[in-house]
Image (cartoon, rainbow, N blue to C red):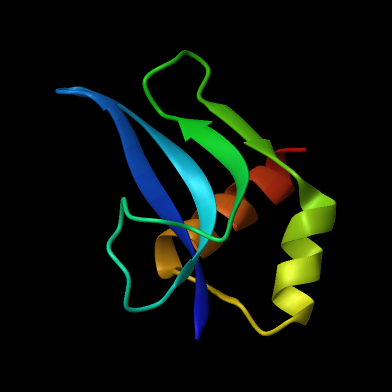
Length: 80
């Protein structure tokens, strides 16, 4: 089963995240199928970039978003 997850990058105490399509059982920062966007919570305002077409493509193919990704998508959908 495919999941849409956050993959952590950056350095200690300064994280940023890639939004990726990944196999559900694979490691958080391991190989991924496709990168959909980025999220950087350390900037002001927080940076959130996402390829909406590819997100819709993967959701139509049965990929499930993790609860954290769902929360981010809902928050940024309301603010745009």
